[in-house]
Amino acid sequence: MKILVPIKRVVDYNVKVRPLGDNSNVDLNNVKMSVNPFCEIALEEAVRVKESGKASEVIAISIGKTESQEQLRTALALGADRAILVECDSLLEPLALAKVLAKVVNDESPDLIILGKQAIDGDNNQTGQMLGAILDLPQATNASELIIEDGAVSVTREIDGGLQTLKLTTPAIVTTDLRLNEPRYASLPNIMKAKKKELKVIPLADTGVDASPRTELLKVELPAAREAGIMVDSVEQLVDKLKNEAKVIS
Amino acid sequence: MSTLVIAEHDNNNLKGSTLNTVAAAAQLGVDIHILVAGSNCENVISECQKIDGVAKVLNANDPLYSNQLAEDLSLLVVSLSSDYANILAPATTFGKNLMPRVAAKLDTQQISDIISVEASDIFKRPIYAGSCIATIKSNDAVKVITVRSTAFDAVSQNNSNVEVTNVDSVESLNISQFVSEEIAESDRPELTAADIIISGGRGMQSGENFHLLDSIADKLGAAVGASRAAVDAGFVPNDYQVGQTGKIVAPDLYIAVGISGAIQHLAGMKDSKVIVAINKDEDAPIFQVADYGLVADLFNALPELDSQL
Image (cartoon, rainbow over all chains, first blue to last red; front, side):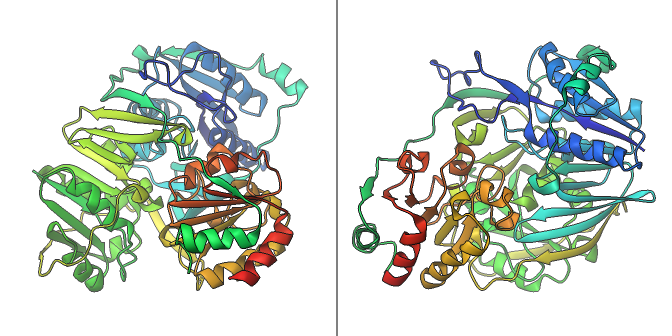
């Protein structure tokens, strides 16, 4: 079994992102960039499947600027066998990302594609499902457990109010939720080894995908701020305020 | 051209998020049709017939749709799409699972999780865990949209006798199969539907200590939630999680106990009407969004709160 894991370079989750002064976009000057946390979980799951003897190869792929090679090297240090960067100058929309991934899936013929359920920059939660639709492949989003069976995968997914279990034919698409696993850290020897692993760069134009944007970003602004609250000194005062001032409890 | 809203339901009851989605649809200014796809959904259909602003109910009655699997349901929606300028669903795990498949089949860039309709092709949506709000213009012919329920007030259900039309199923792809579902049973309201929520964070120290919240929740008729830190620490299951990657809530009263207030948690609750924070660290960022803050040890404050309610 071959597993493909898309990896997105995003602003580190600890960074508080703000709009640019002219509100034309977010300010990403000199901020720390990392692997999207849900992609890390996806990669960890793929590596665990390989370690269990059920997969032969894990391929990491990123679509983005040349700097995304940093995140692919991280993926290689975490256990991916080789990496592919589809290089482009701008951030693509999820539909275009899914179209590029579909080309790569056709070339590489993986049995399983594991993606993060969402990237923490755009919070779109679309790419995996779109890839499924383009290739008519089955999907299990928000996975919390993945079991590989003969020619099928069984996935437990987090849904509102509980859990759902699905059985998918392969090739299959799985998107990861938080509880699927806890990703490992890269060891120094593995970071060194990763430098020697294959990282192939393909220009976006070579995929033949029309990635032109379908949406325009008109403005980025801060959300409306909440009015400053007050500090209370005691539980008694709190209950009084909630009953008589805010009138939210009786 | 009209707007199609995909009803979220469990074959028996309509989910409230559908009513918020219709509210967003109403702002697009064209006729609203609502699709009920499932197995013997008579009650759901009659609930949809009462929704204000809905002109027609479409029903696909087929066991194929009884578990709402995205692979087959998306093909049904696509088969109906030629009559519609807009296709909307709630941004719940149901809508998030389904709609990108619809969008990709229609070669359309979906707009996820909208919080306002500025014009028929311009929408606002949160990005970066709600740190920023983006205003987006869609240039696609069909708009495929998921709606953040908490940003739109539910429409009422005073309509009557809305026309119901049956629609044909689409042949199954036979690539995914429903095995089982475990829905947590609770006497308390669902997090996304609750008027009051009391949530615990890492400061709760253990899963056992969440019983301190349970008793208060029972007195207030509240739901119990948690921060990601509490979920990651294994105190409570993931479906308690409020935040960027968990549930987005906006109750009348949100009580955050032992929650520091990471941006990812604030993203899920900062639109609540009244926020109370109880934390022993007076510098905790949660106090910056709280209407009422109490610096206290929660192990003293919770029993006291319990006794005063």
